[in-house]
Image 1 (cartoon, rainbow, N blue to C red):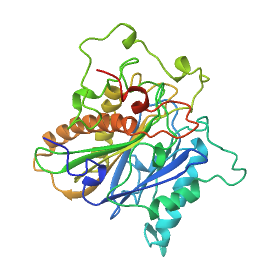
Image 2 (image 1 turned 30 degrees about the horizontal axis):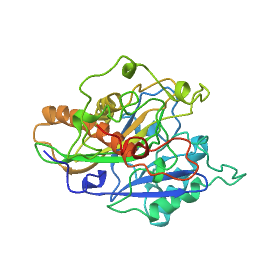
Image 3 (image 1 turned 90 degrees about the horizontal axis):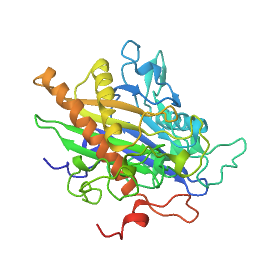
Length: 342
């Protein structure tokens, strides 16, 4: 089966995505906003996560639905983005009701992009709260990939990272989608070649259609990271790939948690290495709850498998779509490989 029409996470009915960025700072924010509060959970398999309000997504916790999920650059400073999204949604009358008060629930995850060449001299006023507000205002069915939103300042071991998305129509009805900000310690391509690790799952040449190489050398399998290739200090919180998997199938929080765990296989297929002690690799799962599963046991199994495949495709698209900006510290895939003879 081919991707759904836009090949974006917004092919899942009931979702919008808003991006905002600051070119001077080389950083940005992405907000995923459901039309109605939606069931969500999270799985964190990286060793250095940065988050806000994610504990409430565990199945045993009380709040059952969220009003937005937020991805941001800026390391810990970027957690302010969740506050900006929360403020704007409150102005729109959205949120969890406590007596006469409404509190928008906006779990947030961040990635580290502080060493990408941008001007981070914001003093006492980091930009992320305002970018969160702007991201809500920009929410739409169609949105930009690559150097956009939370992926604006992202990098990988040897290439610019970016914001990627993909979708897939489920065989028994319904849709799965992924939205990933790719800022990995490792590589998305096989060694120094243009071939993406995610190639086996590619749909309709969405990231170049190159497939895999006929053979791989020993060096292609060598673990190479930002620390070995670009001599960045080996320290926690300097990387992280974060994202969202969405479906219109009705899920409980426990089921969403299971899918979040299974979907991390997509990280392992698209990034080498992944889930390192220096990455905060995280995946949210959100259900807009518009379609009932007819065979819950088997459809949940399928959903986890297709979620992983869709995540891997979104990762490759994020890097493939990255755009060059003057002063970049790493090349884009298209600048490095776009004219290369295969």
